[in-house]
Image 1 (cartoon, rainbow, N blue to C red):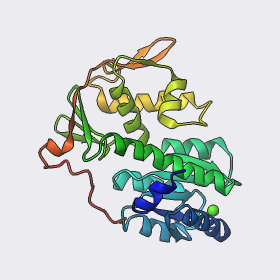
Image 2: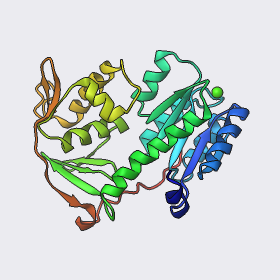
Image 3: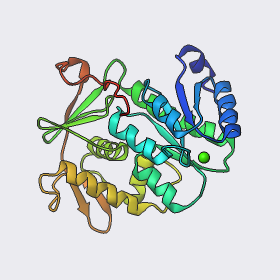
Image 4: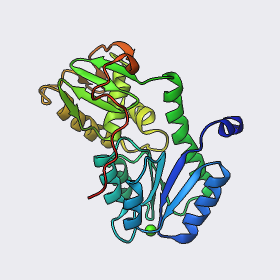
Length: 266
Ligand code: CA
């Protein structure tokens, strides 16, 4: 499966930041076998440098590292770079690690010890999700216009009035999910499934906190939200109808490049 695609598509570049050499090598071997290009960084300093020196298709990030740890690197990437998928490796199954990873905007996480085939499957799942968006909007980014916001799905940027909004990965995914399903009521469980993906049962409180933070960024009066409305006892719905989708290629180029210039760490 997927073999025919892998031979015709340019290889994805994955950066693995992991100080445990055996794990790093094993992942490199299996991801190479799965037709990915892999670069290894053995500690947080090397990882931080490498993370910012090119546009990676995916960063696999161990949380506990010598030098800057995985959470620091994740935070810096989310703050400084255009969207990059991040898969975190946690050495403890403690709730804190998991939630921090998700709150910081990691796309997925795997708890050690993990099976390599499980991790490769997760990597492929992340790329499938991205490819499904790319396939749906070939040749350009889809922009949605909602209220006074423009949502650029490919560049993963949101502009509200004249200002760019700084949204985390999940906040962006949540907003996009709502904007694509206006008027539809979603329970917290449904939002977890659709936006966070499988395996996040029991994290419903995470949905609430993300919605509150998203409201603080997009609502005129976050205390009386008009866009993301609470449906008591059920969940939330998006109370705005986007104007028709427009392909970004037809928009004025100024400020809407979907590639954010690389910025060096420090
Ligand atoms: Ca480690």
